[in-house]
Amino acid sequence: MSTLVEDLRTARRRFSVEFSPAHDEETAARQWRSVQRLRELGPLFASVTYGAGGGDREGTVELASRIAREGGVRPLAHLTAVGQSTQQLRGVLRELAAGGVRDVLALRGDPDGDPDAPWEPHPQGLQHADQLVRLAREEGAESVGVAAFPLGHPESPDLDTDLRHLLGKLAAGAGFAIAQLTYDVEDFLRLRDRLAAVGCEAPLVPGLLPVTSPKVLEVTRRLTHGHEPSWLNRRLQPLLDDRGAFREEGVRLAAEDGRRLLAEGVQVLHLYSLNASSNVVRLVEELGLAAPAAQRPAAG
Image (cartoon, rainbow, N blue to C red; front, side, top):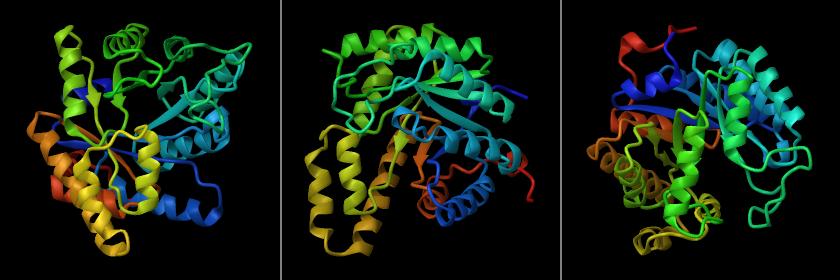
């Protein structure tokens, strides 16, 4: 079987999808129906998020392992260094491996409860994401991904410094990067150009999140630290009181970004599901991202 990095290098017009561990039985059941629906479209992988301070550790291991066992999709488990010792992180990596999860997204992570609080490592933990990459490789992870920041990490003084940090994570053993959410396709393309200018050929995957409600808009504002183009508000602000129209416009915006990225030669789009399948299915169908029939898992 090919590795995730190999699949990312050879993919043509494909998608990946992200889920978060569910916190109640009803959400978990709905989420699993989404996993089953999306597997029919042949995603390259399904990533599973990891709560700040390891808050969703058990849920991450459980969901990623179930996807590996029953989902018919390659799972990519997030792992953060926040609030955990090196020994605890080794334990999580071993649990994931025992569950059949071969691939990890290594993230330093944000402080528990306040993403803007000063970063403080665990006394027996790790300081930087490149250390977590090395740890994951030591524990046998087949492919390790990292985060990339089109606008630069909030703690980086400038984009050149941020690029050096990204290159350091790749040099530590990461094979690909998933770009943090940005509203503007140009931000992603400029990051891709910066990597190409220094000869880096590691796969770089952009993320797309349909802004389908005012609540989702607020979440994305926090994720992008308030960086949003003026045209976004011009298109969404008039629709705040019309839930259906707001959702339609949000999906339309994501599809426009997806078409632009594909036109610029991007081959894989990472779609944030919010634990539901409908918006992802629509984008996959509109953008032509489903796997060829021969590469899709058998029904069951």
